[in-house]
Image (tube, rainbow, N blue to C red):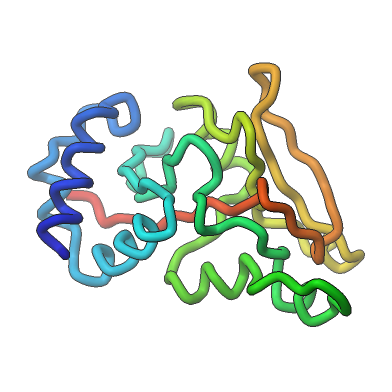
Length: 176
């Protein structure tokens, strides 16, 4: 599986140079250790289409670059508290639990907007993002999408879930 994953990642890397600037594939593949590849495999298997993105600060992340929220990471409420508080029609899991299982981190608003500055994502779906505790403590959670060539941030009850709302995640990569 590892060799097959490497080939998929290499093809995606070569097809999307705007995401990673002057990074050379050989430099990247040298720093992809077993732990990172295991996590990236989970991202790939759940529809994330992960790729390297070099952020404005120069750091490297592997992040979900699927055009819409990852197909197998939708219909989850925000966190375990929301899942436990829900009395009827509970979703299968929460974003918090699924991120923990994968070993990834949820995008915050700034990172979501930076990703959107590279290319347009979530034109038909939406994505849960890290929510400040003062909002979460009141029962809410934040999500984003892109409509009308603009990135919007919205709120919803943390216990809500929709077939068109998922989550994007990422891991930091040691630079070569």
